[in-house]
Image (cartoon, rainbow, N blue to C red; front, side):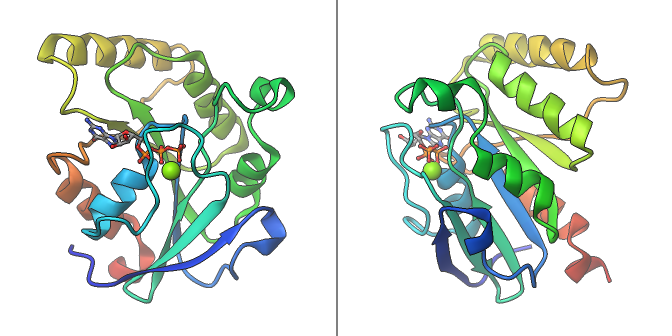
Length: 200
Ligand code: GTP
Ligand code: MG
């Protein structure tokens, strides 16, 4: 699948401001700076559709994009950003929790995980929360252009091991680089295969 058009719809600060749930939707969630906005841009083949930044915590709102006039991508604020208030840091913002549990047109949450580093508690907690709530999700390892082969496989092994403590069967996993584009066609194919618009 190739995306032909991608347009910004709106930014929402709270659940009730979200655009009407009239299209199938994929949400991009993960720690601050993991590469959510960059991946959305790369998937859409657009340089600056979603705002990216080397300063974590850039996206504090949920940004919706309509793709090919028929489905949504939602760029969520990052979690685990140390500069937000202490209280907020303890958990996930109400907006993220509301979004993943209440957004009725949400097909899959893409949980982005930094492939360069060891498994992070906050990612595992978020994944566990999705599991408990029964929210469908797929893990997307990002920035695969960065780690050495050795680091990459070590981190993968450790992450899978940590997941096995929670899950009998491992959830679906994808691997991407928004710099080289590696894994991006596979992710688009995955979206195509799971979006009822295309499989009907
Ligand atoms: P927040 O909105 O702040 O939560 O961040 P985000 O998850 O949207 O991350 P963003 O896409 O803004 O990227 C953060 C930084 O990582 C930027 O400096 C990007 O250039 C860089 N980055 C994103 N994806 C990749 C990647 O695949 N490879 C490498 N090497 N860098 C990346
Ligand atoms: Mg962002």
